[in-house]
Image 1 (cartoon, rainbow, N blue to C red):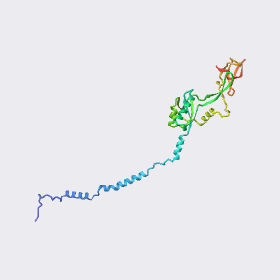
Image 2: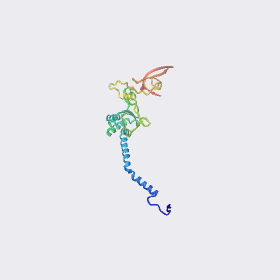
Image 3: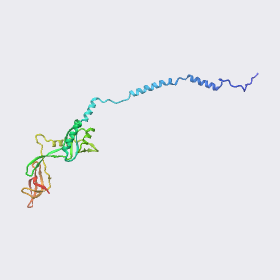
Image 4: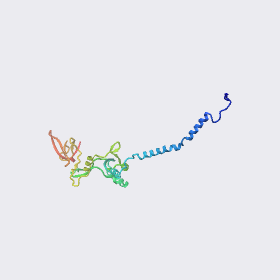
Length: 255
C-alpha cells in the first residue's frame, strides 16, 4: 500500500535548509572568540616594538662642557679689520667708537682702535726740520675686534663710520703681514731707531723751478731724492751741458 505525498502539507518550521544555515551561522557566532580579546596580544606587540624603536634612536653625542668653553673662547678671538670713516674725522670717530664700546660693556670683544700714521720729517722755509704725524690711509680706521651681532651693529651705528672693507658685504680680516707693517710704522720703537721719512712732494723726472737761493728761477729735472736729509738733486742745463746740483727740497716747486 503506497502513500502519496501530501502536496498541501507545509514544511515543518525549523526543519528547512534556511533554518539549518541560520542555525549553523549562530553556532559559528557562538564559537568565535571575542574581537577585543583577540586584538590585545597584537596591540601589546606593537607597543613593545614602538618602545624598542624609540629607545634605539641615535640622538648623537652630547657636547662636553670643555668643547662649549672652546666655542666661547673662539667667539672672543680678535682679528684686525679696516673700517671706512669720514675723511678728516678719523681721530674723533675713533674716540666716539671707544666710548660706545665702553658704555655697551663690549670691551672683551675689542682691542686697539688705530688711526694708521707715520712720522714724516718736514722743513720750514727757514730750513728747520720738524717731525709731524701723517695719516697712512686717510678715511680709514684699523680695529682689533671679534665679529658678532652686537659688535657689528655697534660699529655700524657709530656716527661717521661707513662700513667694513670686504667682499659681498662680509668683513674680511687683514693678512698678518699687512697689519704687522702698519703697526710697525704707526708704533715706532721706543729708542727712535726707525727711519723717519721726509715728506718730499716730488718724484724722479719731475720738472721743477728754483724759487729761492743761488739758482732762483732756474728750471731743471729731478734726478734723485735724498729722503733722509730732505734734499733733491736737480739737473740743470748750463752752456749746453747737463749739470746736477743738490738743492733743499723746500727751495724748489713743481711746474
